[in-house]
Length: 221
Image (cartoon, rainbow, N blue to C red):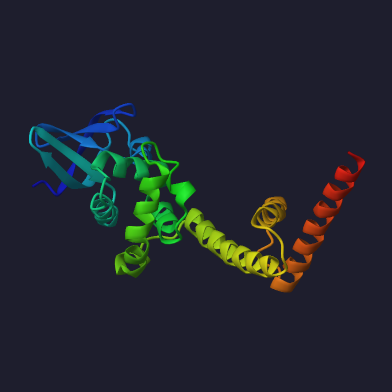
């Protein structure tokens, strides 16, 4: 199986997600992520780590900028119901670092934004891989982008929301009231840096104001 290629780009297409790499007089058609296709140029020298996909009459080369990205691709296609084209779609939509963070922190809706990935597949992806990816040493060595750091921040917000939800539920508020209140609070500004007690007081003020307003409207009606 082919594992690595180095040569010159003689053709590329965003529509087919492929580039033709000329190596020793032979043009190899390589499937690439959207991010990779966008940064390579015609007649430029490139090198890719390769995964060779062979199924009956199908022979496709998938190319990656790093060996770590190739390993991630192979982990993705090990998930039941997730083929190589869908795995490439995930990498194209999110990039490897961002995708890893989404999976580890179980960001289902964000994962499902990739074409061909529905909510059920995103849930299966997180269920099967969140713990596994978090433990892999080479994952920790990958460069942390701003988006990855942002995902970690989102995880902190989730923890705060869970604590607030529990406290408000114990005070007798409904799930719907709590969710709407917290959505409004965190949509307006980043409250992650505030303490729990401050946020709880804010939530109580918000939810009480809404409840009072709703009661007045009903009495007038």
